[in-house]
Amino acid sequence: MWNYIAIAVGGTLGCWARYGMTNLMQMLFGRSFPVATLCINVLGSFLMGFLFVVTLERITISPILRTGILTGGLGGFTTFSTFSMEALLLAEEGEGLKATAYVALSIILGLLAVFSGAFLARTY
Image 1 (cartoon, rainbow, N blue to C red):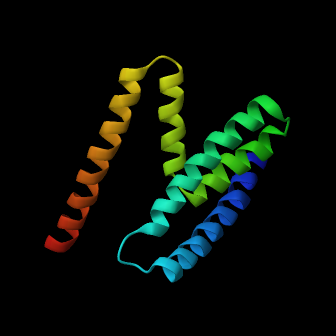
Image 2 (image 1 turned 135 degrees about the vertical axis):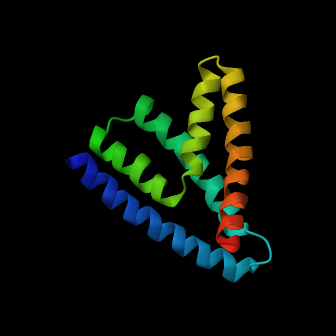
């Protein structure tokens, strides 16, 4: 039960951070290119890699707090960070082909899905 609460709190904070960063980036750079999403995804990926390793190998924190930060906070901030971390773990486990397939399939299928969803929404 505490994991769910930690994820909910972290997710709320992550969503607020995403909203705030989106507003800031759009105010600074405009909306002609998705700078905000790009920055959020890159920052979220960096934080996922950094905090995943730090909280596993360097400092000791409770598993509930770790779940709240990584799954809730960064999951609310960006799910791209989870995708990036999973690709890294596959690569580090010597599964280069699986990592490559995961990245390629995620991008290709994700784009196909978003275009298909938009097409269906506009068609029906």
